[in-house]
Length: 192
Ligand SMILES: Nc1ncnc2c1ncn2[C@@H]1O[C@H](COP(=O)(O)OP(=O)(O)OP(=O)(O)O)[C@@H](O)[C@H]1O
Ligand SMILES: [Mg+2]
Picture 1: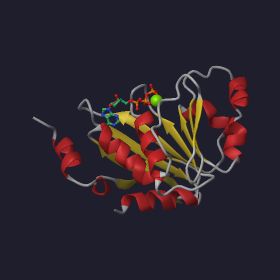
Picture 2 (picture 1 turned 135 degrees about the horizontal axis):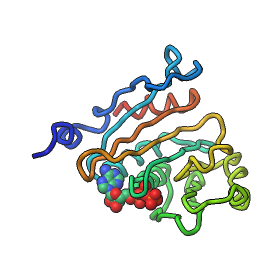
Picture 3 (picture 1 turned 90 degrees about the vertical axis):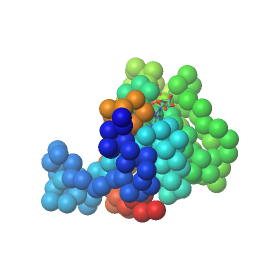
């Protein structure tokens, strides 16, 4: 028998699943926080298709210069989400996992840079990749294993952590907006 929260994730629209919750870890007050606690939006998906659809909705809210940092264990669903983001942002064609190439570009109305930093083991490789230029540039940047690029991330970005939940296909996506621009994006994401 399915756990009640799984049934809920299946039967309700994605926009109804999440809540903006205060992050349990207190941090310095800033524009996106309430009472010094960072906002976090948590959504649950029950299938890869739901994660991709959520990515597509997010991608539709993005514009050049936006940075999306993805974190989560192997197989969590970062590439599935990135594929949706790219499609939603207007990329033509299929976004494959860039694991062996570190970086791929997709051209549409806006260029989308999709990097997978998993195999990156030396900071020099971040430079070789030209990540700082890409992050400064005028495309949308989606990074898998973004923790490996933390020193290069602009102060404003959207951090998304994907976690496995009880139930093989259920995932929790925790959206942590850094900066007013990304608070606005996740607010829109909660609306249908
Ligand atoms: N709710 C879900 N959301 C996303 N993927 C799911 C979900 N349920 C099952 N899956 C499966 O989990 C896998 C996620 O793979 P994906 O390549 O996106 O992971 P990843 O986080 O990018 O891993 P890696 O760190 O190896 O790049 C896929 O096989 C997908 O079908
Ligand atoms: Mg991946």
